[in-house]
Image (cartoon, rainbow, N blue to C red; front, side):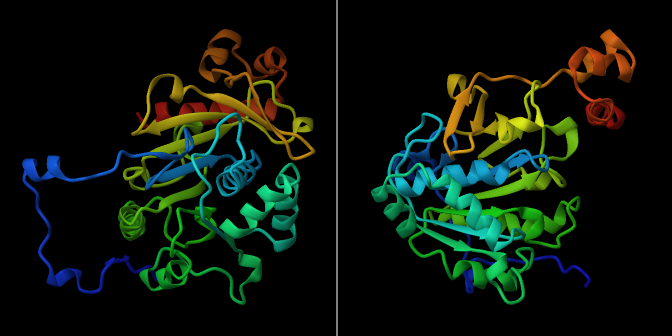
Length: 313
């Protein structure tokens, strides 16, 4: 189907009203509450957030961990939510059976009271429970289906972005309507978090159009640490690649691991190898693999990713 550029208007009669303008004095006199966090440093109030990672790193587990904490009031990686919050999760690709398995693992460490809060505060809109899958969030006629669940909601999660739309990922103009919709939700006090895949820049950005990142308040990248092995399961570095609301120690990267019992652990940050430097030092793929203990195929992939910015520059 040919893509039609979205033209999302958050209010039906918007075109009948002039744009609102403020003098500097009027702006400074506005009674605006101090911005707060739902769960610092991961989820701002009335914010737009992206969490991105490669396939299989643990994006869904990480964001589900945030949701469990936000809805139940339980701490997450040593951080306590400021309250208990109402959340809607929109899933675009996972089977209901697998989603159930993950939720069951993550709530296993909750008290009965925390489980009750979690149950009361979360709505799960799962693709596996829809007759025809999830509506395409790239088209304004679909927003009705999503807006239906958003009364008195603090946070919505889209997991993951590419499974919920057919928008061309590299077309900046195609994402204008989606961005406007998200901004309109933020203006209503709702935090929007979308889960995305790693893309350009050697794993330092989400996939596709730069326009997707422009309105975002916070971008969190998840990456496997240098010493990662498959037997470790869900174990990754958390890196803040963009933030409009904090600096300094709050922006420091960290490492998180989810054990087989459903308990999260905060570990010492273990940055990934500097592949450019390794290539300069060791030369061949074989020598780099020997020095790092990483397979030759993985070394080749990482070197290719690291070379992308240089090729474009």
